[in-house]
Amino acid sequence: MLRMRKFEFFMLALVLLCGGNLLADEKLPMRLTMREAVTISLKQNPEIQISNLNVAQSEQDRAIARSALLPQASLETLDRATRRNLEAFIGTRLPGMSQHAGPFQTFQGGTAFSIPVFDLTLWWRFEAARQGVKTSQAQDVSVREQMTLLVVSQYLGSLRAAADVRAAQSRVRLAQELYDQAVELQKQGVGTGMDTLRANVQLQNEKQTLIVAETQYKTGLHGVVRLLNLDPRQTIELSDEISFFETPEFQADQSLERALATRPEMKALVSRELTASLQKKAASASRLPKVNVDGGWAYQGLSLGSSIPSYQYQVAVEVPLFTGGQIQAENAKANLELKKIAQEKQDLTNQIALEVNTAIDQLESARHEVQVANLNVKLAEQEVGQARERFKAGVASNIEVTSAQDSLARANHNQVEALYRYNQARADLARAIGQIEDLYAR
Image (cartoon, rainbow, N blue to C red; front, side, top):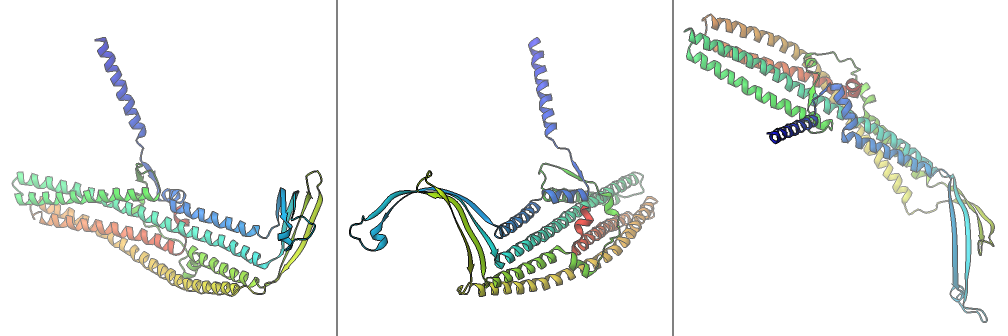
């Protein structure tokens, strides 16, 4: 008996320990507002991280271009043994002289330096690298704006699915009440079996709609987790479900001029255009003379003990005479790049204009849709109430009730869709004018 009790105690402790570990491994749901979701995505999403690395690479390219403008110095130490063939060096054998010289030892240790005094090509390349950093920064902002739009759209889609779930749950409760009412009226001899069957069919339809809505909601949450680069086992909850039914005004400068000035894609193109212009200047500057100062100071001798200080300084002026068409080709390449950027700017201008104008029209239309949809829901709810009372009083069959339920379902669907279109149009307009991160993340 004592052994049995010890065994039971051991098994109970083991179960409690395993259960505690399972509870510790199970992660609690993370409640996220839309702003928090956007903030997390801008820190953790791989595309954002890659964009940040591209900016860091462009900064290193600038540092490399800058280093070419600065003095270069090095330290060198060597101990060399040499034996030369004098006959091969002179081209003939001299009578009475040895065929070779050496071997002999040479020691040298000291510093060498090089200073670019005048080289406009290096300067313009450095300026082009500086503009390259600005281009990468503008492209980084563009990626952040696009990621913000993706997260906001996915979050709004999940809110829409959550609203569909709540509306479906409400309709299921209503259908259940109407079914119970039909059953009760049939028992009292007021209703018919057909009324009860019809109410049951409507109840099952609403339950099926609820299952579909719940599945879409879960799928939307999975998409949010993916965009935020969270642990796939992490579950989340949306904290802004109530605000989905609010339609705040969008206060922002909606002019096309403002959009052209603030869109990061346009800023990136402007920086690319400046970079191409600077590269063209660098190619043209290759025709100019270059002045360079070189030299060195070192101990030199046949051995370390016999070494004496030595030095060499020189000023070199290099004037290019013939480069095999390289300068002309670089100029032509820069001109082609400028023409290509001009076409891209024109296309981007038209695209921004289309996005801004479309978003403004959709936002205004969606605002009116929301007003009409809200009113339609109220009317549909009144219709269901009146049809229910008429059926209860025996004045009409529940065909009117079923029809009113269908009208309410359509009204709920139209309301959710109108609210979603309004919020999405608001996000699209913010993206079109380059202010979506300011609106949703700050």
